[in-house]
Image (cartoon, rainbow over all chains, first blue to last red):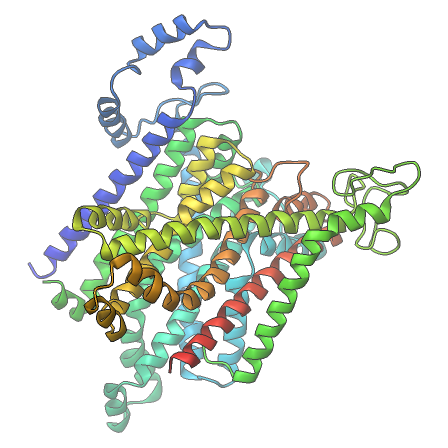
Length: 318
Length: 285
């Protein structure tokens, strides 16, 4: 029961957030001029024809009814059809683009967490010495240099000057050579900012933990230094970092729009931007909804893991 | 992060100096460059949009075109200055909107009756439920690409964090002796807010605003880089970076200028923000 109740509260909160996003994306379509009926009727249709079509498509019913229907369809993975091209069902667009974004984003967040925690721990242990200084400088750069400056810079050095990595996503070459070479730069660029944020946080948390009394006690008892750092200090210092992994996933999603456009990666970020450029509302809605849902889901996992790891949070929430 | 005092003051001065130069560059840059590049054949040249006489497509820095020309032959320096206008205009305008909404909501969250404050603060919380960029992209999806949609999108996503900051600050301030004393002498809430609470907040709001303007400028550049912000032929640092990517292998220098000026602006704003905050901390103790 002690663990279950906070988890239930988080689940409820996650569900509310999902409903909020679904409502916002629904409203976005409502306030946009033109709807599925105007698109289906085509340019030459008279207003009366459009109105008849709207009637038959069920678009003239009151909005609360259509909102419930929208949520129901979305829950079944149905987001309607694209307004343009071959009117591809949006669910097909999603299943084509989502896996590649999810793969790149999850690899980037794993890379960012692993390196961030290691560098942060080193910096925290060697506070104010040269390892700390260099890690701090690096993380300051990582926080301040924007993705869309970093991306062309790295492409220039690794792809053009050194000619080691490909510049753009090339469908034929990806099929021949596999995705690995093509995702290295996108993952590195995506990971940079969250990595810098997590490094700073781990460092601060580590410094804080190392000053606490149980560390002094353990030192006095003669615990070997490495065991002290990893077993005693890091276990405590890592808790706020885990929460931050969830929020820095938002930072990473922001980056995925940039990185996918910069490298022509056929993911959900690029699909969103293209949909905006041709004002393809069903695709925009679905992409924003699914990306938001990923963010909420990851934060939910983090919120559930944290009380399990930390008995203090568990106690305080009952 | 604690830095030595001398170094921080130095960075604050450098930051302010850069920002002053940037404002001057944005104000006079386009006009001065146009005047310098005018020739008898082209007496009404606008260097930001038009190609000057003697321009080549993609010229290296030096000579008449101090920083070179872009792939159409337009003067890079004039376009950078016009891009600075866009960045500063968007950054400052969005921050002013966000400040007025944020202060109002934050104050209402503390002083308004429950039936107003509770829904307002719930709305503020809900805005944190998903990343700003998604809401911004959705708003641009509704309004279509362009400068105005970018301003609307960034203003709508910027205010919640300020509202939260104002609310927590005011919640502690309103129990301080000087506020309680003023209330005891019969001061109204409006008088209290204007006379006693707001003057306490300006410092922290200034520090936070510097950092937030940096964030807004970055976001505008990012959206323009993605092609859904400022539209061609209008320049923006973000779209200049995007344009330069095409010629990266032959003319990497085109990429350097917008990246450099953008990064320096972000650094400068952060230095000034940190400097102001450090100054306030010192005063507070």
